[in-house]
Each structure stands twice: as structure tokens, then as C-alpha cells.
Image (cartoon, rainbow, N blue to C red; front, side, top):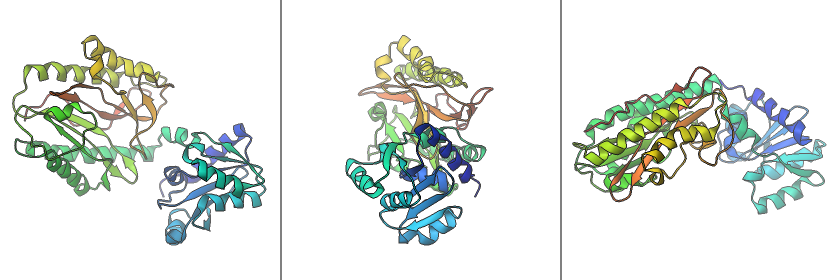
Length: 359
């Protein structure tokens, strides 16, 4: 495997010292994958502070788990969290850290009973924080996923024309991404035409694309668990004056947001670099969402770039920059790229052209 899962688990162990915990129970499947390589739909991981780790899954994944996570012990039991809690007690664990944000009230009660007499302490989002900073292998996968999406878009754009439906265009984008090596779409592809382009998370329908429509495409490819994310907005036919007004505004704000990405930059300040331009132009109320988000094993992950977000950017953190202006009943523009924060300026992973394109 190209990933150093053992090193990742050691970084989790380092976090346990601050919690005065003897072990951690990881139950979020995406975090189990990050720490072991196991991709099954039922799994949990126990990491002991003093060394050693155990993966629990059920009998369906006996062979798969052995192949994907050969460097950890295994327990085969359908009740994965409870089985590992009991194993922790047998190992002498007195304080067990767990992912409280992933456990329901009912599951917490079951976990308390299984872990008795050990006490439970919240781990917090330690694993998610570790996942923010990507290693070279992770960035390479993101770069490849973005290249797949870029290539698919280049194929699809010439076929966007009056008479086609949003649903057909979205399906073609997803098919192209699979044809070029993607494991599938990173999320449900958005194709929003005409007034629908003013709905940021519009779901494709059978609406027929017409001349004069803005068409917004928000999509990405998934590759080995990693997600790309990109948005482009085009005009079918000749752009109207109002379209020529808001498109350059969003494009300029997007450039400003990208330029603000720097090691140590405050996430609110990055958002403001783009948002202030849109507010000054009188469209602040028409930009209702944050500027961007982290991306990796999940399409939306830490950090967040927004007006209420907190924190600063670190090197090797991939984020999106996606300002938009949406005019209800008329249409909207969003332009989005995936980039990686670098000491000498951000690395752009999505490279499709951003200038106003009239199809």
C-alpha cells in the first residue's frame, strides 16, 4: 500500500497523551479507512496508547480485511464497537477515547456497558484534523481525480446545446469521468440551466436547456477514495448584458480568493478577500454560502472558508474556492477550483478555462 497507515496511527497515539487516555476507539468509517486501508461498510478500530491496534468487522469482510489491513489484529464480530470496547477492557484500558461526534445516544449507552469498568472520554475530531494535511500520495490522487474531471468537461462542453436536458448533461459528465478512470462521481453532479442556475445545490431535472441560459456544472471524480470538485458556468448562445455584468465579478472574486490562500492565512480573511468584492458590487445578499471547504476522502471536510469559520491554513491542505452570485428567477454564476495550499503560493489542481464561454 502507498499509505503509511502505521505512521497515521502513531499520530493518533500522540494525541492521546493530552486526553490522559489509554486507547482510542475509531468508529467513523472514513477514519477507519484513513488509519488502516479497510474499505468495508462495517468496521471500527482500536488503537492502544502503548502500541498495537485491532480492526473489528463482520464475517462478510474476513478475507477483505486481512488483505487491506494486514498490519493490525482483527476481531470478527458484527457489533464492532462493543467487541473492541470489551477487548480494550481485557487489555487493561482504564480510559477509552471515542468519536463522540459519530456515536448516537443509544450507541453511547451500549458502549458504556461494553466498556465497563473503563470510563469513556471524547476524542474530539482528532482524526479529521490529521486528515486536513495531505501527504504526497494523497495530493497525487487528488491531482489525478481533478485531471479526470477536467478531461470529461472538455468532452461535454461542445455538446451542451438547446434541446438537451440537465439530466442528460449530468449523466454524460459522470459517464465520461468513469471512462477516463474515475471510480465514479465524487457527489451527485449538478447541471443547473436558466433560472435553476440561481439555486446553488440544484438537482438535475428534465428541464430543457434553452438559448440564453446560464448553465452551471458542479461535479468531480472519485479516485481511490479521494474526491475532486470543480464548477464552471457557461452561456448557451450570446450572453445578455446582465450575464456579462455578474460573470466577470464572480471571476474576479474567485481570483482574489485563490490569491489569498497562503500558509498561516486566517480562513475568514480568505473568505473576505473574495466576498468583499461581491459585497462592494452590491451583490452581497446574492452570495449566501461560504467561499470554500477542504476536500479529500470526503467531498466536504475541514477546513471551512467562511464568515464564521475559525482557524488558519497549513501547508499541503487542499481546499476549494467557489464564490457565486445567484439572481432568483434569472440565473446565477459559480466558479470553483480545487487547490492545495503551498508555502510559495497555491497549487491549482483543476485547470479547465474560467473565462466566459458562449456555446
